Image 1 (cartoon, rainbow over the protein chains, first blue to last red):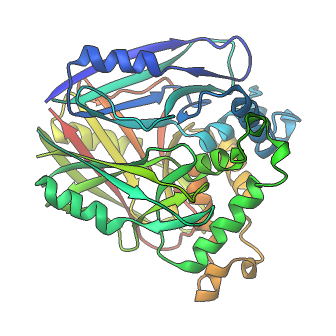
Image 2 (image 1 turned 180 degrees about the vertical axis):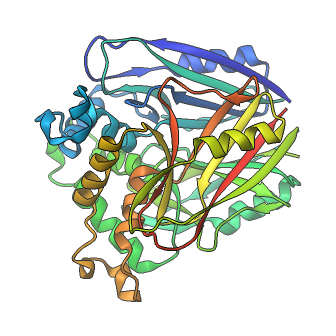
Length: 139
Length: 139
Length: 139
């Protein structure tokens, strides 16, 4: 069995944002030499997500509005977590809706994707550096 | 390491619906010959889900009502994504709540499941053909 | 390829609660002898979750309040699932928000975690014994 590990550095300049990381993950799969297997891609920080959906800016706007409705940032005093001095409790909630990780099949040396699948990093408490883990296993 | 790949075709005749695919996944695991490993099962379309829960029609009704409350289909004009000519923005939101994929352990050649676990395909924008990927790795 | 399987028994004395299981998972990884691979950790019951987030009691309180807002327990008659004699329909909904499983990379023989990542069992219908599956594969 082969394995291959890479870390992607993210730095979203606003509090929230979505970054398409499909090409970086695809390149890591190529570098791994794995032809049949799986790749795990996960946020290493607990106020961020990795998820698969559409590369369409209108939808990303919809996600942002929707997540803010499900788990509003303000007033920050509504969350006990923010009593610790943080203001990011909402980010921990939003991340649960969008998920921490994706696992993608590798077939014939490539991401085995449907027609519209793209991998995104979802940032909910940005303006600082965070990492994404890419772990490939297979043969 | 062994690997095995199958694609299931789905065609839900209504906009939304849940389909139990446990027996198809189980059969794919048997065909793989893998005794110890993991199976990834994911929707290949971004307005559909694969998830694990209960085979109980009342609960499926509850999921449908609840998801429609969290991310209503109408009015379709409330979503920017629908400005592209689509009417399925809500499906992309519902899919994030229910998830894209499951990873299930294979132990002694079978799905290593608790007493009530069943695998479902969740459709949120149906009336057309879509695929589910089943990827088995192990030995 | 090596594989290793363990089952953790949980018994949360209240209806809802969060239990940090990071050290149990870490010990299972050590026992597996796997240096590079992945570990799957999943609830084997469909009204419970396994997820990764922060070990901070204020945040756990926030999760509980938030999930109760998204999918209230009472009135239990609002859910068709409860017509079967159950009162736990809300638990099946909450579990979907928080997720069934996590997959964690193993690098150099240890969980490859960011600075704050901790693995939790999330119980939404407790006061009875349930199991968590830990499956390690790799080399």
